[in-house]
Amino acid sequence: MKVSALALVLFFVFEMPVAFAQSPNSAPPRSAFVDVDGGRIYFEECGSGTKAVILLHDGVVNSAVWDGVWPAFCKQFHTIRYDRRGYGHSPATTKPYYEADDLAALLSNRKITHVALVASSHGGGVALDFALRYTDFVSHLVLVGPAASGFPNSEHFIMREQANSQSDKPQDLMDASIRDPFLIVPGHDAARKRLRELLTASPQDLTHADMPLPEKPNFPYVRELRMPTLILIGSGDIADNQAIAGALVMAIPGATRVVVPDAGHLMYLEKPEVFSGLVSAFLTAHGF
Image (cartoon, rainbow, N blue to C red; front, top):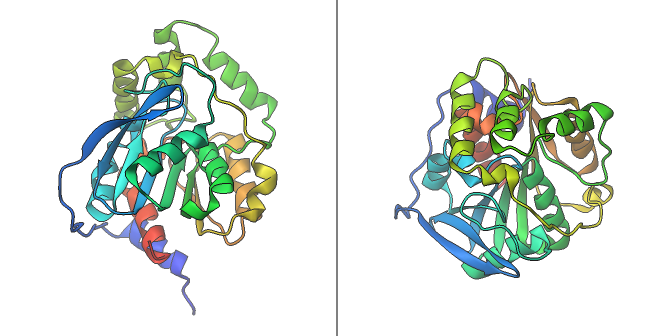
């Protein structure tokens, strides 16, 4: 019986301990700001070179959400994570802007020419916009419960978003996110506690004013993408995100979808070792 490469990847990630090779560059991570049009964005970087893994956070919390997987990525790859405008250490914008252009400015500043984008939720939508507009930069895509503009949302999804954001009080917004069973599935108390800690430290993540300029809808054009693409979705994520993941795996040529069991929208908080193992195995199997 022929065993596919994906089956072997899943066996080693879900059944075997995951080990990461030490990167030749073991210097401590660095942090700094990059000036962008109408603002600044904060980033952290480990390793060096013209090729890098870029971690794009979701729409709930800043780049510290990657803390559980950051050491594993840094051991194996030149890796950068950054706070989008208004999140974490990055101040809110002072003018309208394109989110994909901020990523382009960061790559230009760091002199990076090829990237693997590992992007969650709203960050996944930014990654798709970037990959369609700056195609030559992107060698690999990993989309985690991604958004895709041009894909319609259900009434249930819209009503849930409205219910979670009906208050203008930071504590109410925080509580709504923390108790949301689609973000973190029931039983993952440590992940829920960590989400509370992150939002308590940066309440502006949920309250900052933002002025992102709309790109053209990306879903109708994802069929044009030609880089290796992995789509990760938690089994407990909301039905709309499940539908987007299914539509993207059908639309992007050669894309692979993996459903991570007993995980929600923020699976890297819930199962960091499984997440790191899946992404690492995918990137190395495709030559990154």
